[in-house]
View (cartoon, rainbow, N blue to C red):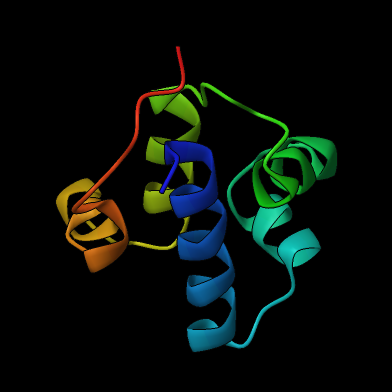
Length: 79
C-alpha cells in the first residue's frame, strides 16, 4: 500500500473512532480543510510529518500510536 493511502485510511479511521468529521478534525488540529481533504483524497503523495504531528497533537495521541498500525507495515515508496 502506498503511504498516502495508508495515511488516508488512518485519518478516516480516527475520525470514525472519535465520531468527528474531517472538517471538524481540521479545526481541532489547526489545519485547513483543504489540507485534510487532500490527505484523505490521497492527493498528497508526500505528506509532511508536521501535518501528521499536528493531527496527533490536536487529538492528543502520540505520534508513534498514529503509525503503530497494520496499515503502515508494508508501505510502498512513492518516489
